Image (cartoon, rainbow, N blue to C red; front, side, top):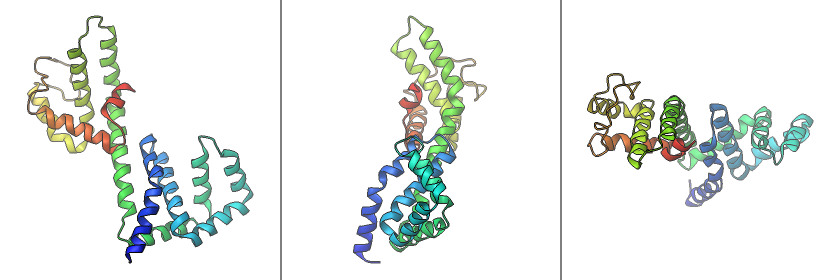
Length: 230
């Protein structure tokens, strides 16, 4: 491994960051897999020219693959179609293996990098999905309240943050601590026996829960506000 090899790999990786960033737009595991493999394709095109060219030629000479890719250009299915065709190529495994070999040479763990992104995204999607029914109730209540105040909105967002935390494994202790603070009997139903006076964001138990949910949102390529507004 030379400094030049490391520098070249880093340059190629940075060129493909935009593809990696697409993980934040994914809603399913299948969509994440497409982004991952598109990233491998982009890396291979500049790091593994022989394997990439062999795969590319196989797509050009395969009428079905070529027609599918050509017809999907400039459509929202373009990336998925290209990746699907590439996976079907007899040279796909060689290409992926070559990319990993180069990354290992320079001490980069591409699978580790991707798994971190995927785990963060799937965890956040799970939290948002689980807390969605409660969010609907909270926002409907706010919309119907003609006399609502800024504090009312803060209160509802706190309940939503708590609901999100229930699906974030690393926040199990923080969510339980907050449940005890607000004297919640059923952790899955924060509105039962809800007492606004107890839900005080100035209490020391709130900050780690609040920050933990915001950090989980960032790991998932999103933000708490985006989830609330959706």
